[in-house]
Amino acid sequence: MNKIVFGNYLPGNSAIHRLNPTAKIITTLLIITWILFANNIWNYGLLTGFIVLETYIAKIQIKTVLTAIKPFVWLIMFTVVIQILFGNHGHQYLSWGPIKITSYGLRAAGLIFVRFVLIIIQATLLTMTTSPNSIATGVEKLIGPLKHIGVPVETVGIMISISLRFVPTLMEELQTIMDAQRSRGVMFNSGGIIKRCKNIISLIIPILVSSFRHADNLADALGASGYDANRPRSSYRKYEWNKHDNVALLCVILLGIAVFWMRIFS
Image (cartoon, rainbow, N blue to C red; front, side, top):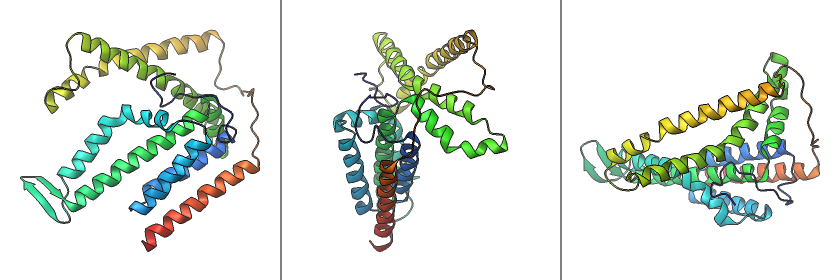
């Protein structure tokens, strides 16, 4: 299996794989909303247990899902450190100029860390159990009513499908570029913060060039195949909403009620 997990689809026949893609997108958005609304250890314990249960039902190893966090480690750590060093409320443990480590800052950093991890894992479960074409179809169905006010729903769907297909490709190329830079003596895990930032910035231009090259090749391929965004498209797979989708949606709604209750009364 590809080392880059986020954005990769893992074919399967689990109960979650078989859900309607629109139902999976709606439930994912709701779960992310509950994650952002939660504010204490009981909320996050419940949400963590629910996501672990999802992973078990999807027949995906926890270790596989956790590897999806790796590409986002720097973003998570940067955000957490900012919260720790510049908190202004609560009991103050350390003060040095503008830098203040407080109880509020530590608590906020912990909440942000947990939120980032749970949101990434939940989004990863969606992409691992739903093919890019299915996600595009689900989004088209979800935003279908916007067609009446002139929104190009089909175009939005194909854009999402293409974007998801290129996430693992670009991440693979980023890893290849980093390996090439390391072979030239560039170290991304050593030196001071400024030096590390400069080294990471050196990756931006190559990955942008690679992105534009892929976009040009894709545009040529679509043009050669006669693709016309203004013409109606058909779908090979037809998705029907059934009782299993209702059960999944009901479970997520009950989860949200429990999270709200814990937030208010704990």
